[in-house]
Length: 129
Image (cartoon, rainbow, N blue to C red; front, side):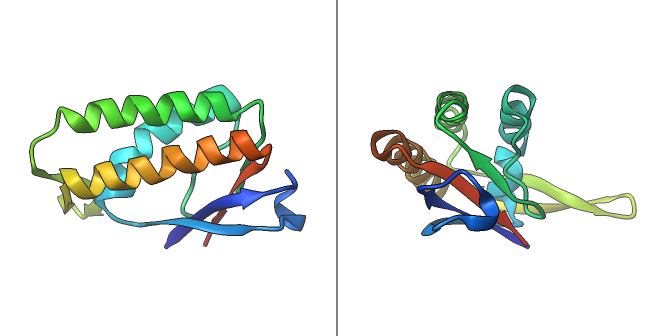
């Protein structure tokens, strides 16, 4: 499972003129960000989801940007690497290793994408599997 995140001049996911951007996989990086994506959903009604689509119009982008910046600040406080729970097999947690440099690179790319959307007056579109 994955979600592709990019830019579109339209805010209609079905008619998006999607420009490729960033892919998030079903791994520790996505699941580290998941609580932040839930915060975005609570404020915008749009969710960056592995299984669904979303569109962040100009009105939603400041919320998305602020929450990603909060995620970035939290990531800076993490150790060089740690494990994130990505699911369960029975009573056993399935863990995935996350490295701080890779997470910070991903967050920088996401924040840059939102900034580009704002400057180009584009929507941020997300296509889940």
